[in-house]
Amino acid sequence: MMCMPIIRSAVKQVFILCLLLSFILTSLSLHAVNSIKINAYTDYPPYLYQEQSEQTGLYMRIVDLTFKALKQPYSVQTVPFKRGLQRTVAGDGIMIAVLKTDERLQTLDFSEPFYQEKLSIYFNHAPISQIQTLDKLKGLHIGTLLGWSYGAEFDKYMANNYFFAHDSNLETNFNLLVKGRLDAVVHSELSAFN
Image (cartoon, rainbow, N blue to C red; front, side, top):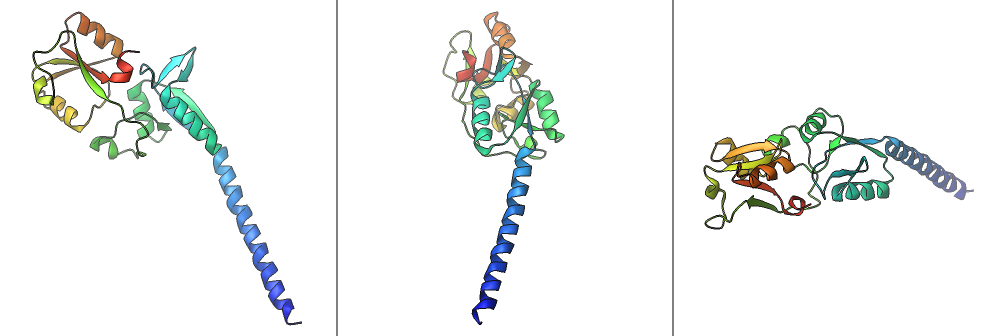
């Protein structure tokens, strides 16, 4: 007879644990049902670009594999970079492939980087000496991508008009470089030759 209360207590605890576990699993499964909106941009092959009207690229593949492993549904909305950034700041989705800056940290949360790109400066002709620091760019006309950041130091030099930045898309920047209307173009090494 003395075992009965202990058994009842144990059964009661198991029942409560099962009930609690079912609530936790239900809330997790409900969370996974909500689709996450991704604001993606194009014109950045091989990282992000469109192929046959489908958003693709290295970053999209990483997102796809990650969300599939988590069984997390998502949708992709392809918009220009600046518009995607504005929507993300407004809380309308998340965005991939955005460089963390002090200014952006005021309105956005960032994950840890999952890939590190290498930036280079491209010239139409070989510069007199190799460019190792940003102060060597003084007075040059440099093609940059509209709305992009190339790091805090580069952005600081640009804001102080140390060199002249011409915001455009990648193809236009390289065309202007070939025509001699730009002195240089700054861009990711892997993407520049795609």
